[in-house]
Length: 77
Image (cartoon, rainbow, N blue to C red; front, side, top):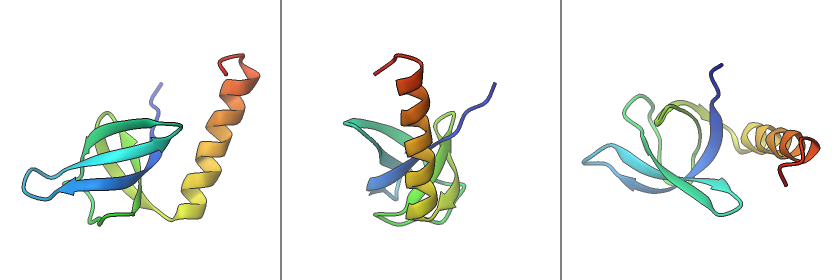
């Protein structure tokens, strides 16, 4: 199964095309952003370490809320 997670870009190294993505709840990871045209503060959908799509903030928050709900229902929180 493939899973893509939305997050907010909080840092960008344009030279290396790498960004730090904030997924909420203190989780931050690096992702390659060479597939999308993004800037600081944008929300992106990340799969396998690559930002594959730019999202608006509302879409990103709705998806993150669904993930939190699923994790909570499964006893992971």
